[in-house]
Amino acid sequence: MLPTESPTGRTRWTVALPVAAYAVLGLAAYFPAWPGDPSRIPQCACADAGMNTWFLATAAHAVAHGHNLFYTTALNYPHGVNLTYNTQMPLLGLVATPLTLAAGPLSSLNLWMYLALPLSATSMFLVLRRWTSWLPAAFTGGLLYGFSPYMVGQSTAHLNLTFVPIPPLILWTVVELFVRRTGNPRRLGLLLGLLAAGQFLISSEVLVTTALVVAVGLAALAVSRPSHVLPSLRFAAGGVMAALVVVVGVLAFPAWMYFAGPGHVTASAGPGGGFLLRSDLLSPFVPTSFERFAPAAVAAYGDGLTAFRDYSENGAYLGIPVVLLLVYLAARTWGNRWIRFATAMAGFTFVLSLGSPLNVGGHSTGLPLPAALLEHLPLVEQLLPSRIALFTVVFAGIIAALGIDELHRAARSHHREYLFGDRSGPTTAARFARRATVVLVAAVGLLTLVPRWPNRTVAIGTPSYFLSGDVDRIPPGTVALTYPYASPLHADPMVWQAATGLRFSLIGGYAFVPNARGVPTLFPSILQPTAVQKFLINEQGGVPFYDSTPGVDDATLVAGVREFIHRYGVGVVLVDRTAPNAGRVARVFSDALGRKPVIQGGVEAWYLTEQAVSTAAVTP
Image (cartoon, rainbow, N blue to C red; front, side, top):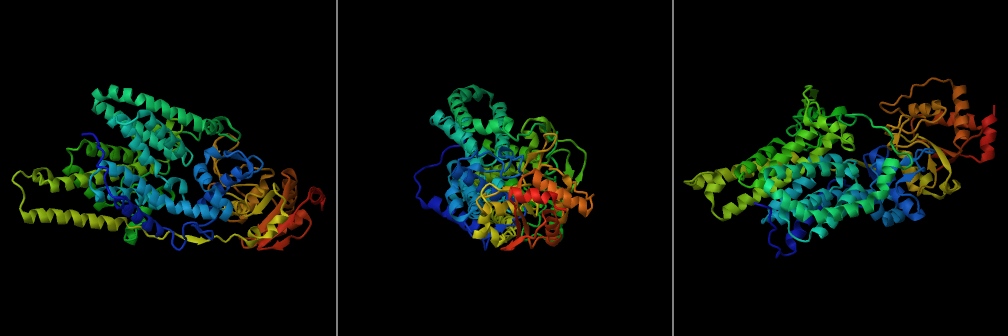
């Protein structure tokens, strides 16, 4: 049967209570940070959370100053950054602009990080509420989606991957257009177009994954019900055209920026460039350090199933009890074709999340998998397979909700044959034993999924210089050279810049930019002389996979710093006094500039005019 809309005459509390429960659960994720907190940041300002803070600040700055929302030279100066290649989240930035301008980008980050979990769970719940008749069934599916290990892992710092209320809505709209074929197709198409465009403006990666899953799902439905293909196409045609009109209208300029705008990538990283991060065949069954009740030895093993031990990307974990419960629900309600469809799609998306070749226990077997076929598809080739597990969770939530709902309806109707597969009907004791077993497995399953919250948050630690009037000594638009040098694992200067409302342009940065061959890289553009960048990155502790081999003496380095500052028109040099080796770096800058710094608010600053730079360049 087709998924049907459940009765609409419900009291408001049937929606309000689950949403409130999700909202309360979400508060546990970042305690003691609170939604809108301007003083704390997830993990640290040095990495992805710092980068996300900067992206939110950039959107507000673009709105306030009428700048291009998708390109800036405020970062990675002088080459700039094409933001369409990055986790920019312009839609979230635009919505939060008033808060960002009033309280700062960190307030916006903490608000969105909090909202991501309950809003995603609520979205899934509302979709499942339309496909089920029993509130607890829909609530369970929403809970599994919004607070799954995938979400828990990504919630540590990846706002663009945690804020996923749109994918369930896209799936619901597609079902309405192609399966149920009710309502106004053009209105559904307009909604689908807005949802797709909105998802692109939050995470193009999630949109591409959603489109891939939708395409495969529709193909599977077409094969299973070929007689429905033409009626579905006729009904959906107008809606699809309306969706395309909206998508083209909203995304024409961002798409042009992506493919042809300044700073666009001109070469691919090559097949499988992003396929290192992928699920392991054991990922669904082995917990990681994110699960509160996982034994330490087991969690350590689970942590090692993902490349670089980045277990935040082990989004395929469900736990043995939950997997057993899903298998039980699917088996007992197999007569429901949507259970069969969701089961097949859960399996398919998990296989895709494995990437290629197959990994078992953290070791490659060399066995190629279907994901190898995706390595050559435009856009899809850049996906990280492990993140496709988001849709494994989507379909697991659908199985849970529809399965529980089917069993509940069968129990209420006394359909013992359907419920237990026994024509004679089990005894009361047998019925009690089976139900008690299911409840027990479900309870253990919930325990295995309890996250090790709260996530780590820290005081922002931005030097007071950037939060006081001292920073006003920097004229707007000045080019700044900082230490730490902005780069992966050292995004702190981007947070400083964001705190000042992007008052200065920053040399270096943590963002995708094209390298000399046009291939996207997270390392800042190489500037001349290269010894200066290498020196700064080495002194702050280095960056993995970055060639920063030192190779010059101090006299050559000092001369190189003078040339670097003169070449790129640096107007201010800023050194965080608490950074590793700050004293040595400050001495090099003092020697190169021929003057001592001004010490203010935890920062050593050299304010340079054009005359001062010219003089410094020839100072012996």
